[in-house]
Length: 402
Image (cartoon, rainbow, N blue to C red; front, side):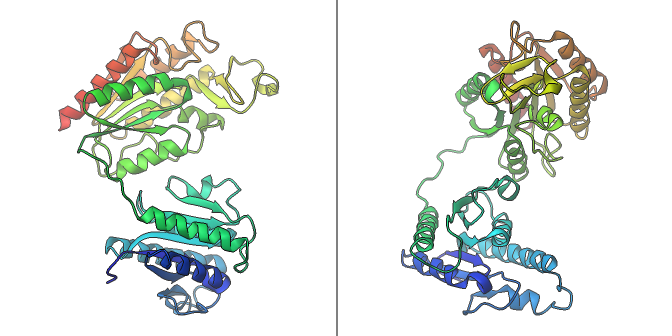
């Protein structure tokens, strides 16, 4: 067993061996141990690696892994298992990799096996692209290589050295959270910021630690994932807006099926509020309204605008929410602010639409298991008094199972 936890330098050494050896050297020169893991699928590592998965996977199963995609999948699976095992044993404290399109895919797929807080640095030629599909919910640091990664030169060497410095600094953690407070996950987004700030203050006044998640698609899924890992004592789902944007392909789309569904293997009280379910947020301004939306009520915000959901869309969201919550009704409660669900739909606001809200409530009451309490508050979601009610309700739900 390694005496001091090391940084795992993981990469396709058959194509980028020089660069990964450089990373290993630059990390070790900073006083941090480093181990090497070769995950290339074309040939063995050109230098002795601590773990050569080409020899362990590709050569041993060569007749089965003749297709490149299958070979890559097999190496990723083996590497994820190896990296997880090394971390659990205390042999590694972080991971770094460098690569192009395929190397980035391999690297981040392996990094995803490490838990939250473990340093993960990916030097990538494609980091300037949309990284949401590959980074997902993980705390991966992406560093754009600027130049292509083909040897160590005066440009790539500078980038790789900074990456080595980044992961070396990250593994030398100094800060530790203080106290042992119960933790509440809180979802929020821009249109209910005042509500989220007030809820946070109320819950903190009760002695809770509040961890907020931006309900932007990835944020909601990250919250669900961490809930499954046991991070939270309660979930205050103030912003369920992602359902609307998923339906309308809006700005905060991208949730998976697990959003708002039971947390597998855990009983976590969840207070559900229809925050932002009045609208979908789409990327257009008052100067370029799409033709198919010109008859809709619109709240112009910045480079995005909120579109009021139609009656049919509103009923669909209510049905979807009921179906998700009905899967496990234990520890579920719904709290509805009857004077508006975002800054866009309060009385006098562009998206104010009482019939749509009534349609939502009627559908939800018809389809939601009657054992799930639905409480109405004669307040707007951004009213301070609503934050007090939501916070006290969350506190009661947590205490009930404590």
